[in-house]
Length: 112
Length: 114
Image 1 (tube, rainbow over the protein chains, first blue to last red):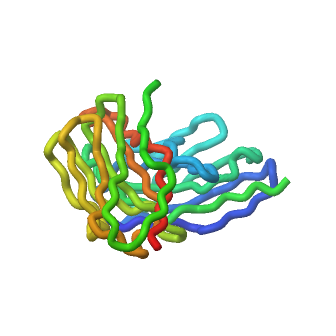
Image 2 (spheres, rainbow over the protein chains, first blue to last red):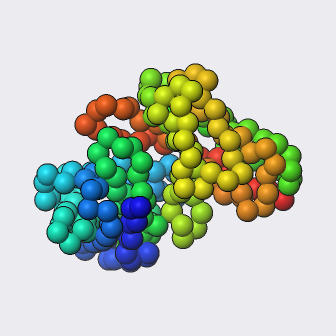
């Protein structure tokens, strides 16, 4: 079955710098890759997703890239701000399957 | 307001005492799911449901039961809770048949089994 690995488990960056979180997946049939953000004490919420027919997607300061050949996808956050501090989860699924396979999460710390 | 609600939000119980965590959504979503979240392990799916009266096991179903008698409700039942079920539980729902596959999460239920 599908397996999703996420790195690093903790990432500390200076405010204003960029942060990159990487995930790899094992099932080449996976074609839907969402990213969820979970602030401390809150529920996970979708922040961006990408499908396998595109290589990159941007939404303001966040972007996701996908390399289907290498079976990995990454979340990029530019100009980090204190409110970016959270745990970020990647996931993978086959479109329409709804069974998301989750990474273990990355705790992003933004240093002032 | 569109939302997923869970009750209770916090629960302390003892081993073996049956409990139910309720989940309700008002978005007319077909898909509903239960996850548990433990440090370092991310989100692990317990059970999910694609529609009324249709439920399936996720990755960690042992010790849990669910039912889907109505579209809006998806309760999680622990018939005989054990300490290893101490965790943070999330219910989620989503709309089937759409290009957007966002899962909407409830606020979470923190369970402690003594």
